[in-house]
Amino acid sequence: MKKLIGAAATIAFAAGLVAPATAQKSMRIGMVTINDTQHALANKLKEEIEKRLKGAIKVSVFPAAQLGKIPRQIENLKLGVQQGFVSPPGFFAGINKNFQVPDAPGVFKNFWHAHNTLTHKDFRDKYLRLAEKAGVIGLTIANYGPTGIASIKPIRKLDDMKGLKIRVLATPMESKAASTMGMTGVPMPYSEVLPALQQGTIDGCLSNAVVMGASKFYTATKFITITETGIIPSVLWVSTRWLKTLPKAQQDEILKLGRELDSWTSVQAFENNKKIVKVWTDNGAEVIRLPATDQKTMMDKLAPLGDEFLGKDTVTKDMYALMKATAAKASDKAPN
Image (cartoon, rainbow, N blue to C red):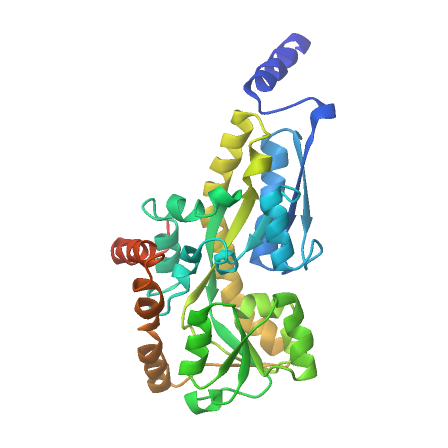
């Protein structure tokens, strides 16, 4: 029996899936959110890597901006001093503008249509490697969920949006979307949003109900309007400088695992989005949806923005066209 165990260990070591204890690698995964789908994805990756690679890599997870604000963590990732990071891809637009294309409003029919488009073989790998030259690739991509606006005052109809200052991502398209609806978009790091709401610096935040609920935005905003103007993807990024230090067998296993977690993560996100209404209402907040006529009017106004900002831009037009073509053939049903 000892000989059999020894032989198995020798085979695994030779394949590069395990390594001596003295050569154990470290992987730190950061994010600015906590107790949400992104946090769950990082914990799942940690569990699977440590199990599949037999302890060759020790993974540590740091939520709630423990490793710094988003720009710092992206820079750390590029340098290889931080090995993993989970965030919406829009934050990487400074590296490659094409990361904005899933933010276009009105492209996706529902949650699963977005998931099936983003993870489709024609789109996924090309999109996740857009920052490879900068030293970053995406391991996992998932649909975090639809957009919503958490606000200090209720937004029950379109006219209620006029004059509001809301936090948006630092992209021209999100700022234009806000102004189209009569609001002022204020780009701001996520970790600064809750204090800004508490101080009245801004009136609301455009994000997702799950991430804002997990961050307890309901302590400052007693209203959230589920706008569903678009979806928010999330990506688990990895430093290629770090990845290349691993034996090829370990690299391949991690890349394979990342792909496997696409659907796992979207399922977690889908369930979280179903449960989030109760989280907000249990904490004294009101969850609002616009009247059907207002919802249609809003989407009609916002739908052209993708073509305006992405379809006409020489940098983004090809990736935007690829996403739309992929969306046209992607299923809107949940994967089996």
